[in-house]
Image 1 (cartoon, rainbow, N blue to C red):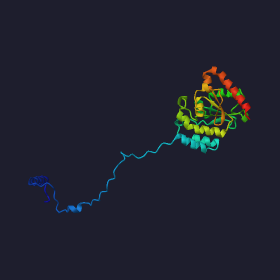
Image 2: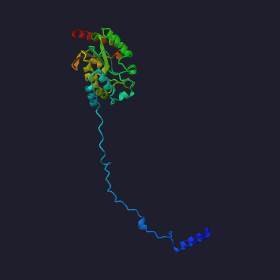
Image 3: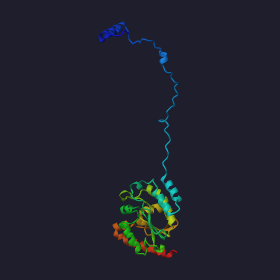
Image 4: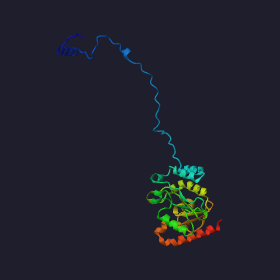
Amino acid sequence: MEQGLDFHAALAALAWQVELGADEAIGEEPVNRFDAVEPVAPRAAATPDFSQNNPAPTVPAADPVAVARAAAVAARTLAELHEAIAGFELCELKKGARNTVFADGNPAARVLILGEAPGREEDLEGRPFVGRAGQLLDRMLAAIGLDRTSPDPAHAVYITNVMPWRPPANRDPSPQEIAMMLPFVERHIALVAPQVLILMGNTPCAAILGRRGILRLRGQWQTALGLPVLPMTHPAYLLRTPSAKREAWADLLDLQAKLRTLP
């Protein structure tokens, strides 16, 4: 291309070439276009995608009851059982609880009292039966010579609950929640090895006896887990229904009489 053209001359030369039919710019030197093309690698065969028709298999969720049973069986002491329950992550109640409420009292006691679940005060303190219902329970036990703080097994009691975590708004535990904690409850009772088991309320009756209706069950001795079992109304019910205290007193006297017959 000629050098030294001004703008107008260059524009006129371009227009003239367009009129001649030139449709591309040509350099001063010829270019071999075949040398400029990069070799194309052979294309790998595409792998068919069957993900939509055949989704990857999902991993089945862990069975809470089976996990609880394995953890409970592995616990050889109450301390190990406490640790196993505190480490159990498959119960939704644990997420809303402040504390894992394990037990209170003398583990050498002849009497084991099984309650339902922690309330607000129990959740805050981390011990069962410490609220108004618990204070009433202590007075009831004292009336027949029993005390959770007694070092003497003959006069002591051991207290725990079916559920170690407080249900929201103190609702009743669901059958699923009871079922997943039952292996821990049974192991707890086996490690303490009491002579008498007291079921206070519907939830422990459902867990141990498979039955509800505490007002029908109370005061009737039964056998479960190889132990004499006495269902009793929960102290919280007695606070709401003072007229039921007479029946509760009769149950306490029945418990006292049973203990006198046992070695």
